[in-house]
Image 1 (cartoon, rainbow, N blue to C red):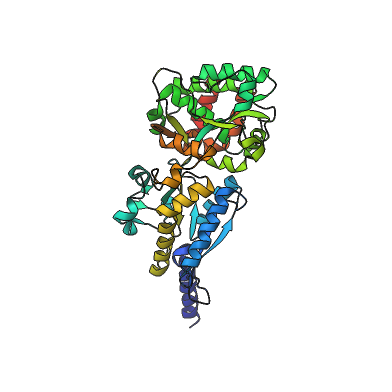
Image 2 (cartoon, one colour; image 1 turned 120 degrees about the horizontal axis):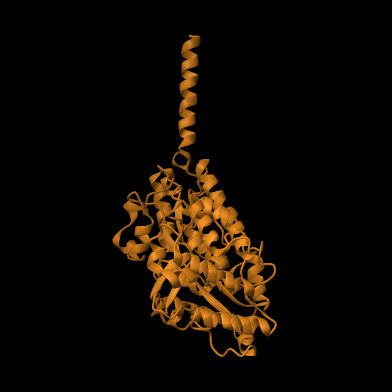
Amino acid sequence: MKRRITSMLLAAAMTITMLTGCGSQWKETEKTDTGAIVLDMYHSWSTDSERGAALDKLIQEFNKEYEGKIEVKVTINPDFPAYQEKVKTMISTDTTPDIFHYNFNPNDLSRQKSGKLMDFSEYMDDEWRARFGEGDLENLTIDGEITSIPFEKAGAVFYYNKEVFEKAGITEFPKTWDELLEACKKIKDSGVTPISLYTADDAWYTCNLFTYLAAGYAGVDALNKGGDINTEQMKAAAAKLKEFWNYTTGDAIGANYSVAMNNFASGKTAMVIDGPWLIGSLGNDIKDKIGIAQAPTFGDGTVSENYVITDAQTPWAAAKTDDKEKAEAIVTFMKYITSEESVKQLTLEGAVFLSPKLDMEDPDVQGTGGLLGEYLALNANAEESTVNIQRNLSTAANSKLPSLLEELALDRLTPDAFIEQLAAENK
């Protein structure tokens, strides 16, 4: 009898362990007192930002429309690098949020291959599929499963202080990289630091510049295809990046996004390469002084004049569930947030550029003025694009990148050695 009881307890323990290991798939669906399905949503868009406020408004509108049926409850972590790691931890510990977003990296498919994400394939009808560029869906289809829904893919463009440029005697934004370096010298001589860069966290600004330079030497197709980065073109791009380091702030080494962005927003620097969310961070005292420009080229036709570097695709994903009713609730919300009206609202009120299609012929969109209007027009006219190189590096290379950039900036690494060491980490 004792042996039988022991066997029963062991079997029960194994069953509990198996269920626990399956995470959200076996998690009981939470419902409100009125019977509404509760969806836990985890994201990084702080409500004190334009895009966060616009997203929050959209979620509230959804909850009102589906009152008594579906309720989305939100948790926000505005520290995006920490947020990214938290998502990975939640997946590995079987606490995957019902809905969350992340930066897609083709060199790190641990999320998609975890077996813990919902596959949207059976729900992707023709009408919903038509909302996205086919390439975006293809990139996010892993092993035949659509485990992520395309959402944000913002271009990183040059913002520049027109007043500072004019005082330095520069009447238009430079068309070539050598002209831009000449402009940097004039701006520096006028008493203003030319460009905001930084090395900490994801080194977003610095890597935007580096990617633009690399595309200028190698073309966007070479970067889009990935592969070995230990090439002569990449070494040339690193050497040119080193030249620009002579024109950034003294706190760039070790600084993060907040420091570098505020250097531009406060007028301490004349240029920055950023996405549309920057617009909401600019005060009215400086916003009217800012212009948006296409990136320079080397003038040799390697890239088109209208090319753009983008952030990584930042899609939505959902926890896998065996509850059909809950899965359908998730799909209902995903379709709502990627609908034409929602995308229009998020774009115009939140200053974000999204993957789901925006009707550029819409009078409200065409009537968008100011910096956002300039930004939308530039992105709409882009002929070529490639993703910021940092977003495609391996985990090991990403962790090493800040120190390598600092060594390059401090002349402790040559441009060739910088690329060789980064490539070695990226394997």
